[in-house]
Length: 121
Image (cartoon, rainbow, N blue to C red; front, side, top):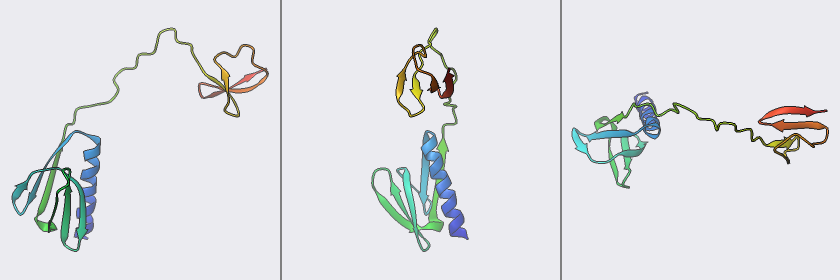
């Protein structure tokens, strides 16, 4: 049970590493180890650590402590500027073929315009 909890905790921490600017501290037996851990594998009570520079290290998992820190600054899109007066749209047939940018002159039928169905009668 302890091993499963440790594994799930480490995987959760690694998932955070891919989503934010992270830093980390790895200690083994109370001594700090330089580098960022990119993969952890377990063999019995031992943990094998793979670092971002290609180094590996194995130690008893009770001696391994990994602390991650990340920059919590928001990185979402704050504003979208639509091109003023932009009316360009692509029109496709139901079969997915490009039919043009304007419905004028198209034969009767069902078309896809900006992801929505449009019927020309």
